Length: 328
Image (cartoon, helix red, strand yellow):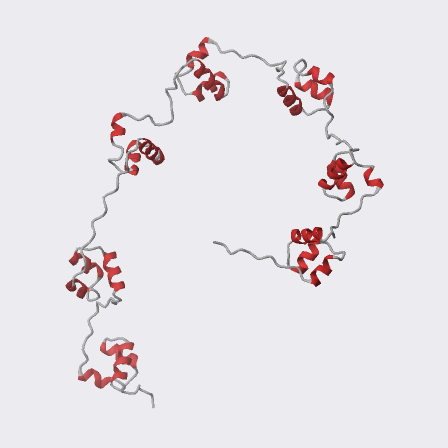
């Protein structure tokens, strides 16, 4: 739950700034507040920065649309509309209102002709005609022929629409009006054998078997009230025995996996949990002759001669407290 933000009260110094001539946005940046907060506080204090209306400003109201007057007077549109309504000045329509003679043309003349005569957009003419319920005067009734009716239901609706030059909505309406079933449904038609498999197989497996989307199988099963088939959980491997744990790190993980009948990933994970390092290399014991060579020459030469690593030479020499070889 989000903490409730507490309102930051205005200090006397901030109130004094509100009485100045700076804009709301400038004060918001200076005081670290939002312009809306500044505007609301100024309105509460009666310090709103609304410009007084001049007589010449009022003469523009109603002579043109409010949006244009607002641009000319550098005011918000709502201030212009409120002032005009307060003075009882009617709104100036951006488009001319319909006259009775123009309304008589609707349904008699074409929409394009009326648009040219009245300077109304053709969309406005069409919308006004449809609102009044007037028919389209130049419409051409394209009736269905018996040959076209024979195509309905014999092929997909999209193919009928392409052959008859109609849209698919007109084809669907005509087919339904004649009570012709659609034999080319895209949705899956369930058979009794398929319904019997619901709940006996996982939805994913049944969807792949029936070659239909997963949500179709799940929706059909839920609509019939059939519980989902839970997948058989994988067999859990037996716990690690002490003898198996002793093998970790002493031989390669693949060899441990083959010997214990587990996967290589399980062996690596168990060794990581127990923090057992993989050390398949057998440490060769040091002989007295090898220890006599330590410190008699550089560690790299001794390592090369004895077939050991330089780190092993340094570690053994440090254990025996033998100083490193230095050239005289």
